[in-house]
Image (tube, rainbow, N blue to C red; front, side, top):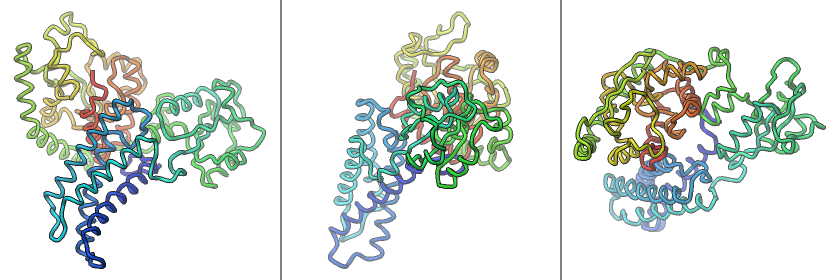
Length: 464
């Protein structure tokens, strides 16, 4: 894993960005070379092609990553793949045409050959991804992982590997020295007739996750683990695995001591000032851009079901302070006529026709930009919850109150990583992502979340 501004990236994703950027820039140079007489490709032409190529690569790759096209394609249905491919191709067309219009090539070069070369290249990269291929060498596409342990914690890691769709091959489980209870499949447990170091060398293992239920002295071979690490094998603890590989702080893998003495959870004057400035400027720009959509939404809500257009509701913010959140009304006026708070569910009959559309496209959240300007919320952070649910969840879920250590957000890491939650179990899952954000938040992670939010909105992922 590679850490950039407190956020972890798999080396495969970094290499994908580099390789695909080279391909896009090369396509531009190929189009320029075809329009150039032999030996007359000047330094200025190369420089202008490089600048345009890098700008196009940044735009195209950012859109594709936001749409999830460079993640695990196996997680997408055929319909989702087609929809995202169409969106990707449309955005590629817009980005390429926009850059060439703003930065046109000078005579004797023409924009059209470069434009078509980029479209063909982008289409080719998408087709390769859909066919299950990749431009990276096979050694960088799949990691071989061994889980050190056979108990409950080891089973959690194995289940997460099966569900997350990571490009990782689980070689098996290796029993600890003092483990007595085995809860993982017997067929996946590797016989302990050889040392851990020998096993790792023999099976070409790249990564070991230590997931023992018992961690006291003598429960594991520290010398073997150190030998593996010195030979280039990545050796990590279960808590670090979930944080770095899945972007979450897993409740079954951490302790209060790990949270207190580990890195992260940093607050400071500079960081708070940068985040505040980012929020004010970002919310102002978004309000300006979204004002036509907001006006149309208000009209449609009034025409369908009359007033009120906006819906105000108490939510819990930073340090447990209660404030009023403002949203476009997406439910009937009598949605909670009995006065009992309840989560929205899939196919909720209380949602109006206009409400179903604006919830799917997240338009109902836009008035919360005024809450950002007021200072009650941030653009990015844990989603604020109602006091009734906060009281319940704080009792039922360990560390739930930690998410109130920073301002709540219009969007968040949990919103782009997990589907819409409508139960205590969902809240517990989302908390693991919220804690990751509280621990590692930075302006860079905020940008990633905002970009992925665009992908969520465009694809309607997780809406209720």
